[in-house]
Amino acid sequence: MGALPIDVGIFDRLEVRMFKTVATPMVVMLCLTTIPARAHHGAAAYDLTATTTLDATIVAFKWINPHALIEFEALDGTGVIRRWTAETAGLTILLRAGWSATTLQPGMTVRIAGHPARNDTASMLLERVIFSDERTLTNFVPR
Image (cartoon, rainbow, N blue to C red; front, side, top):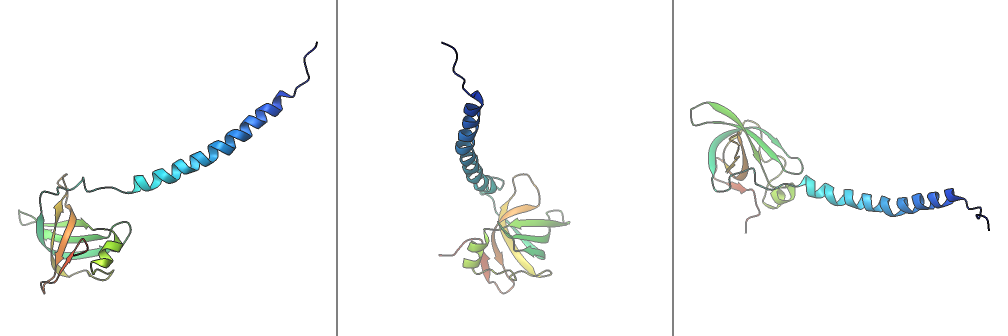
């Protein structure tokens, strides 16, 4: 008996087609599940056991996702004006806590309290802003 004339190429094409049918959805699912996990971060960069309170002049209030940013100037311990950044909670939480995109305006003077960065940069995780009329907005939804 002689060898049967079989087109081996058809098996190769079937394997490639099956691989694409199975592998492509798996790769897509892997990408979709890792992007959100990578995009979110915790508060590990901040010292949550310490609170810094500064008399501040607002430079900018950036109402952006995933967290609004407050840029402000304040005197450091040596009397030098230093530019700081305070990271807030997400915009949905801020809205529920009474904030809006126009809450802080450049030139406003407020008192800002937050948890300082562990790397000694002029940045913090916001806890609250106290206005000159003693009104307070927090970085969380008050109970």
